[in-house]
Every structure is written in C-alpha cells, then in structure tokens.
Image (cartoon, rainbow, N blue to C red; front, top):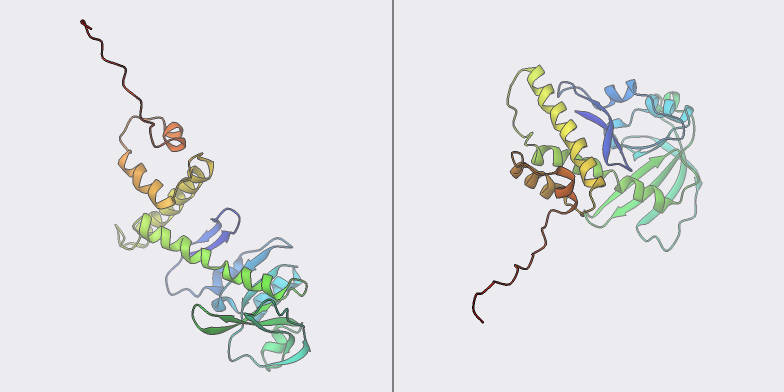
Length: 235
C-alpha cells in the first residue's frame, strides 16, 4: 500500500494498493501534486527525474540524500548556533554523469545529528528560504506515516488477511482505510479527548448496544447520580 498522508488531518488523501514487489517510486510518478505543496518522503523516493519534475512544478520536497550521490558544494550557508543538532547547511550541484543530466538545478543539503539513534542524516530540499531547523522538523514529522500504518496494522488487525486472493487483500485494506478515516473523523469531532486505540476498542464493545453514538462519544463516562433519600413510614 502506498499513501499520501495529509499532515494537518493525519489521513490519506491518496492511496494506491499494488503488489508488494512494486517499488515505492512507481506510483509516486503517476501522482500529481498542486503547486506550492510540501511533500516529505524517505530515500526510497530519491529519483532525480521525479524530483526535478516536482521542482519544475513548484512543489517543495524534503527527503534524504543517498550516500553514493556525487556532488560539489556551491555555497556554505550559516548555521544557527542555537540549533546544535544542525551540523552544516550547504547548496550543492550534482556532478554524477547520470544525475546531473536528470537534475541540473541547485539543491540544498543539511546535515542533521539524530541523538536518539546516534546517526547523522543528510537531508535535501529545493527550498532555500526555510531555516535548517524547519527542514529538520519537517522530516521528523514523516514519522506520522509510520504511526498511521502502525495503527492500520494493530487496530484493524491487518497483520493477517482473511483471504489470500489479490481481490480479498485489496478489499480488506480498503475497508481498513475507510474505517480509519471514520474513526479519525469521530475522534476530531468528539468533545471528549479520545485516544484513538481506546475509541476503537470501546466502539467494538458497543457495536450491538442501543445507544446514541454522538451522546456516548461526547460523554462516555456517566456521572454518578446520587440516589434519592429513602422514604420511611415512621420517623
């Protein structure tokens, strides 16, 4: 499954289900993004023809540079000392025989130290106006995609499939996506601050209960009502 996740909503606005051996970049090439969109992807999507097309259409991208890419540094940009995790900020041009023909423009490259995993990430973008910290935070937000698929697998039990035919697998995946969209909608509209996993679990319990859905979602915990005083015949 390949999906474009909307950052604000936390929901996919595009999904593509294909055989597992299909490379990530193939469905991405068929999808068009509006101008001034911002997309954040991992290294599997580093295809310089595709990235050049995004740049030509005024689509901003943030991704990671592959280690085997040859380039020359055009300009060193100043690094804010407050951002200790930013190691360098540079503007480069590709010098490889193939890559420079696929992408002739300039690219911004930012070295970021990831203390959690004790590694250095080399980020690349075609935006030259944002601070290096902003680019770093945007790439960090890409983890929301992993969280989304984690929810799909755990909450809707997509670790195993009911059927084994391609059509059965697609049906189960599409049903899971539709369910995720509905649950996210309920969570956002509810007055009560739900945890998504709790909402899914408790709604399963109430599937056959005759309750008003919105009343229960807005106020799932009933207030304790004091019982009236007992009536006695004799004082």
